[in-house]
Image (tube, rainbow, N blue to C red):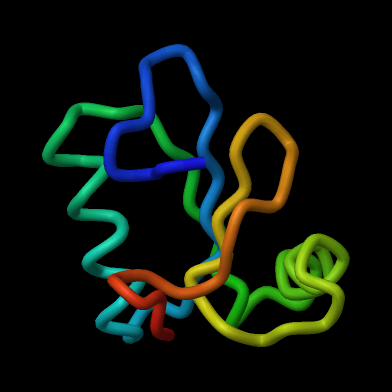
Length: 82
């Protein structure tokens, strides 16, 4: 799934660390396109961290991006970093 050209109508969720520069970039990407997204603090909230690990198979890389309930990727950029 190409997150650069994601069409409207999808539900985007991001598990982030508030100070992660790649998380800031991912949030800015979706916000600049007025694309609705929900952000969860996986660094400071143990329940959200556990949910992120369930999607990523234990990968701690943020942002972890979930679209329509399906895990898409961890990290941001080309190649994804986080």
